[in-house]
Length: 213
Image 1 (cartoon, one colour):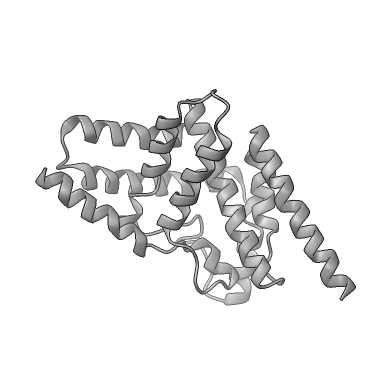
Image 2: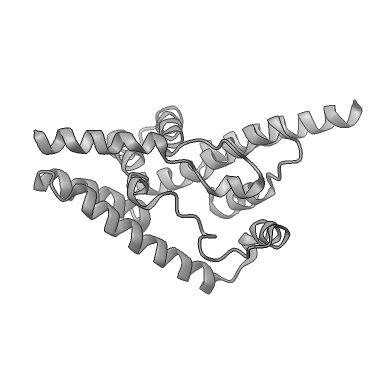
C-alpha cells in the first residue's frame, strides 16, 4: 500500500504539467495535462455509450495515456526542432502537418522512447499485476489495435480541437486551422465527426457575427 500511496502522490503532479504545444501560438495559460485527461474521460463517457467499446478499458487508457509527462514534461513534435527566431518558428508550427512522413516518424519514435522509459520508472515499484496493466494500456494507446485505443486516440485529437476553439473564442486571431487539419487526418468516429461539426458551426457562426459588426 505504501507504494500505491506514493504513486498516487506522484500522479497528482500531472496537475502542474502544462500543455506546451499550444503556447507556440501565443497562449500564455494553456490547460494542464490533468485538464486534458479529465475532459477526455467525459468525452469517452458521453460519446462512447453505443455499447461497441469496453467503457472501463477506454477510461483507463485515457487516464494512463499522459502520466509519463510528469517526468518528461509535455514533449511536443517541435522539441529540439524549432528555430530560435520567433517568426521562423511560427511559420514552421503552422506548416507542421505538411512535414514529411519520415521526419514525423523520426520525431515520434524519439518521443515514444523517452515517454516509455519514464512510464517504466514511474510504475517500477507498483505491484506487478498493476504495473503490467498500466504499461499494457499505455502501449495499446500507441499501437491503436483495439477499438478502445482507437477511440481514445481520436478523442485525444478532438479534445485538442476543443481547447483550440476555446482559445479562438478569447482571441479571434488564434489560428485553429492546424487542429482542423489534424481532425481531417484522424477522425472517422461518427459521434466525434458530429461533435467536430458542431464546433465548426459555432466557429463559423461567431466569425459571421464578427464580420457583420
